[in-house]
Length: 157
Image 1 (cartoon, rainbow, N blue to C red):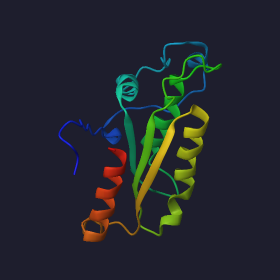
Image 2: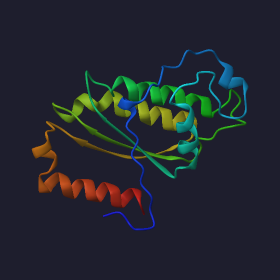
Image 3: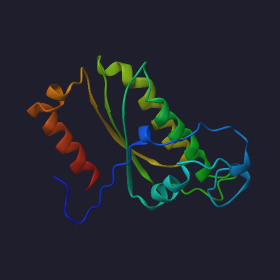
Image 4: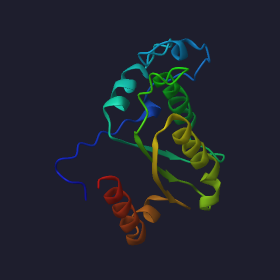
């Protein structure tokens, strides 16, 4: 259960237009966290900066996050310039919640990506909850409900 003094906002990337990073390098030269691409990612930078904990939630398709989640993660690169004199990601707590239609091992690549991301950008990797063979019925089982509650409790400590 989440405390009353915690605000949770869900953002559904699938409903947004977020282009992948074009590797133009403009953000790496700036010190304000602005990407040269103007799309639905633009307001998400401010939300990311203002958040204490970010939960990357995505099903796993073909051993990775969805395409829109990959574009989101890639574009976060704009929040850090080349010499790290500006790094709006430093200290951010990032966790992963994922489902898959197979064993948990299929999420390993995606999870490793976020762990490396956290290490490079000086974020705090705060854990993963992965539900294998996921269906609505599977997720609703008491075992997973308890794991989800424990995961949330750990993130809100």
